Image (cartoon, rainbow, N blue to C red; front, side):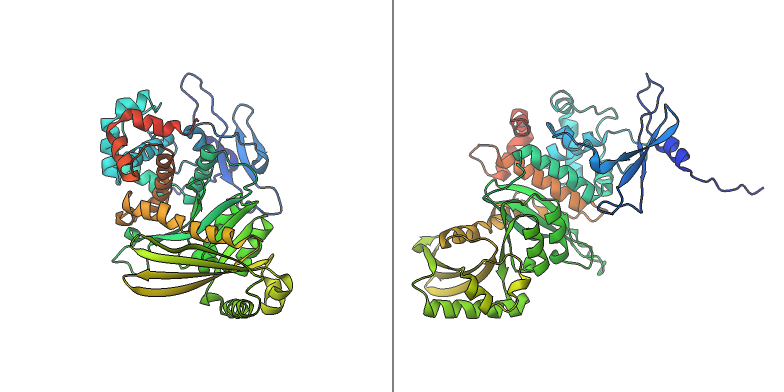
Length: 453
């Protein structure tokens, strides 16, 4: 006899998926059942999530947008709201235990899940006694670690990463006089060689050049690029009062308008991808230097200074006359808040060969030539202090993670580990700090203690 299909009503879903409370209390705890697909975040109606109160037997509606989240005080608090992608009732390991093991093992020099499992087994007593992990199901296997990290949605993990950043630096609402560099990085080992349609994972990240701290990152979508990912990254950052520096890929009218709308300032490099703007800025620079060179704000840095086997001199000129900018730049009104054009010339001599390079930037901030020259150089710290360290000390490009979201999530874990290790005032490089953490439990505890200072 054919049975009629079971209809999954809201009440059934609530009872089926609400996790049980500890055994000494026979009650259920209210648990989120589903998110209303017709009311996503940012829609006109409030984004609501339904909870089922099993004590009263009636569903309750909670406005998620108005729920006040406490300021995180510990690493555990940062991951308290992370959505568990695993099947309810079939998981013997706590989600936080898995995250903490992966982070601690990454700090200690483990670059794959096999070594992470081996590290956890060797440090099991320390993980229980000093890190406070329950490990009710023992040490998770490397397969469990991999499957869990591959199943967590990167956007959910990014929310926890943002709370980790707040815990690290106690970010104030206004980032006045702060400099944030944004750039993309490809994880070359994530590409499947036998699948031409599968592209490598590409992440776009934000870096605090002053604090030496990764502020956040987002994964670019398939068949997309940095242009679509940068606006998403800006949405999760507090850039009010900050100067956001982006290379030529981010020199877009929409991105400039988004930064200004968030009460920040932009410093965008101008190249051939904005041909009309590039031609106008180049012509403006030539005309201004020929006619008003004595009145322009200009500076020179490291004239003839020899460093790293090369002799280099840098010259910077700022053009910030509003009338001159309006007359010279045809799309002036489309670039929101445009106040300055910055021209930087670099003369370099290496082994007797001299080269000259001129770079152009536009900015919504008025500043001196020396300040713009400093910001232009500091922008590259995202390459030298973040991306290069991840490739050399963490071997990020060598990782062959290709399942689910493991590559994107572990990329954020490495940035968390890098931020923690950089706070350690030890005369060791990041690679040697990781080695020290592998055999010195006291040093590892000091690394995590940076979260409570």
